Amino acid sequence: MVNLEAHYYLADTGLSLFGKVYSINSTHNNETNQFLGLGYTGLQGNNWWFKPWLASHYVNVNNEFDNLKYSGFNGLALGWTAAYRFNVGSQNFFLGNWNEIEFERNGKYARANHGKTGVNGAVSLGWNATDKISLELAYRYFHNKLGYNNLGDAIVYRVAYSFGS
Image 1 (spheres, rainbow, N blue to C red):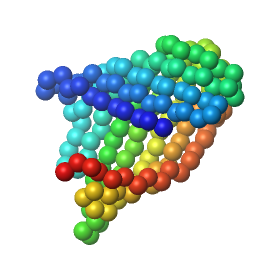
Image 2: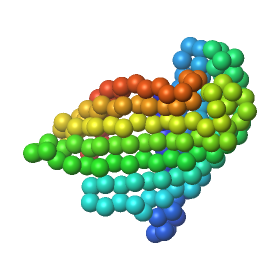
Image 3: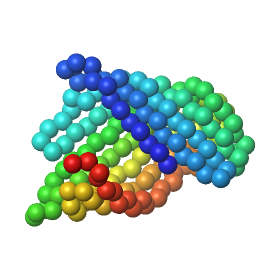
């Protein structure tokens, strides 16, 4: 899975042009989701931030399981990313959340994903073990997404290394 997200800040307004692309590829299912819209980056404080966005949604999908091939406009999406950093003793931790609510999906896509609305997101807890290495445990949730009917979930473990200075 590849996930890229960006905000292009519009002066000091807190508003941004928002873009996001993520792609899931497997042997029988390839799906790329693209979002383009407006975000707001002005909700932040000491060790926390919340960045909501509203965007048009485009999808390119080839899912052999659901016999779905579609490329084009797929409705709208409302989403956010949020984080809170905190310390326990001398250790640095963070809580995170990302969420997307897709609505008014294309008819073909909606039939294959069990509804005109879907939810996709995760809640995570991370530990910055060193300046370069972090570990994260995430509870991944989705509803009428990824070809699943109703609710689905997963646990995701992540080890990250920062190449920056």
